[in-house]
Amino acid sequence: MSLTTSDLQEIRSIFESAFTRQNDENIKSILSEIQALRNDIKDIYEMISELEKNTTDSKFSKLSLENKILTLNSKLIIAAKQAGITLPR
Image (tube, one colour):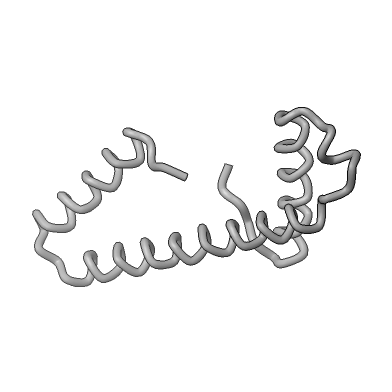
């Protein structure tokens, strides 16, 4: 998973505004948000990995790549709801 140019620009602008104000509180807040995002991404990858392990039936392996992604997405949404997690769209 890679960041888009827009993501990088947004991150850059957040850091620039934090550094211009030279406010340690803002920097700490940004760093904690980044850490939270890293943890969320790690959890999502782990959930996807588990879903992939659980979807080894022959019907799934015969699906097109698009249908595989749609199937995994729907299962991920269900798992996120069960875990009480709101996924970004």
